[in-house]
Image (cartoon, rainbow, N blue to C red; front, top):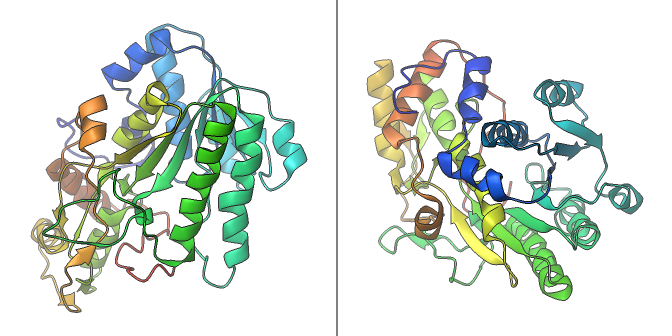
Length: 344
């Protein structure tokens, strides 16, 4: 992975995001059952499902990979089908549609709602807590990896280090509170039905079209000031995050395992902005008072269990800069990593 010099188009980018770790290929040789990715049409879902197909092929096994979503964008469904993912249209807020889904042994649950929460909090709560109730009950005979977020933790002082899985959640704002609600609903069904689960607390995935690195790079590229309210953050290459999500199927337990998913570095916002300034040949401007509190996670458990990420930070910075310099597109979905009041 680190030998890549540049990625200039989406086809090449997606190809890099679906490279299986050797550990994943080995797991697929022994993992029983097919795989269903619920909420597959989001930012990470398509490449995660395609990665599962690739890992299955390399393992020499015949796993069927399902992708479930509303598919309001037909292009997403077409892309998945072209990568040998069997798609199923389902509105997770309709209990009868969830009940009609085929019973699959391995579930990756990625569905959720974040952006535009302010002003429509009731929909966020329904999506993040009601849908999980029906899914967890329907798939009670499965093993389930539940996507969550590091935002369920409190903001920590940079001198303290990242939050550990053993730290009590202290979510700020209704989005983060509803994410903890999602965790609690799944955890309840985990113990009630003896369903093995893993709560996958991710922050932040980066794939060149979106992510914290993209957000900072785009502002530097467009001569916009960089807000220093959040002085540090965590980041992980989306390809590594996808691999970890599928590897997590081997770590599901009762009660549910909690695992932080991110890179090993505590990354400086100022350093990243200055690095992009150097790569772009631009002067970087900053704004706001440099804070001391931010969302940081300690992912030592993940790295100890599944190995370190394959994509190093410095290579991500180089690829991100080259992506913008070559006219690479963005998804128009900022992370809002600078938000500290929980209002998205």
